[in-house]
Image (tube, rainbow, N blue to C red; front, side, top):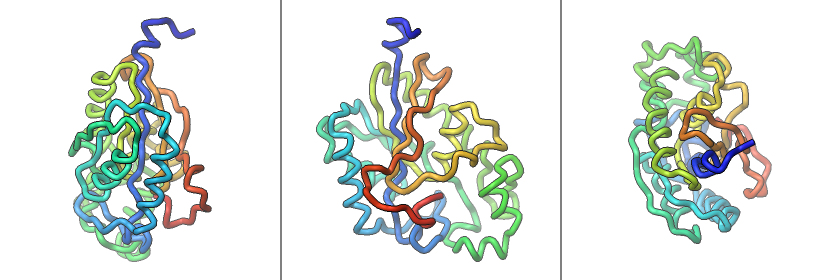
Length: 227
């Protein structure tokens, strides 16, 4: 049973993956150093997301400064009734994927087969030394302090966090207590999806409310929507 003090501490986090980009459509790795324009259809999907959450009062939006995430946050924020302020945090950026950035998935699979397989399916075995990027623990260790700080700055509030598919997948699962080896087992996160978690104890623990919700997009997802 949640007591009054715990209820006061409740913070609900709405994690949103950025809108779909040209490189997403082409099945290319973007990473922290790569970027490509958002598709025109993505703006319509951002509007659908904002409409879906019109009755939620968001205290703040935090976003990765990478353009595809920043523009997603700004576009959604303008359409929300509460018009929350937006803060950009570099700790919310996507994985640094080094040499893989800009490459098609199929080309990475041929050139860096071990890195390709482990990045997708075995986070505990993924070693980015060959490609010059970040490991899963690197990303978790930079993102977690940012999320805890967000929670502590927003007690009893709703907060939206706009970031990237691979980084969000790793971080959210970590916050939920998922072992490193199992971080990918819940499946991917779609473009313009929302995953909701909450904490009743100032970020000491988290519970999952909804994973990868895209019901408001009214479309059937394909493999280029997920990461």
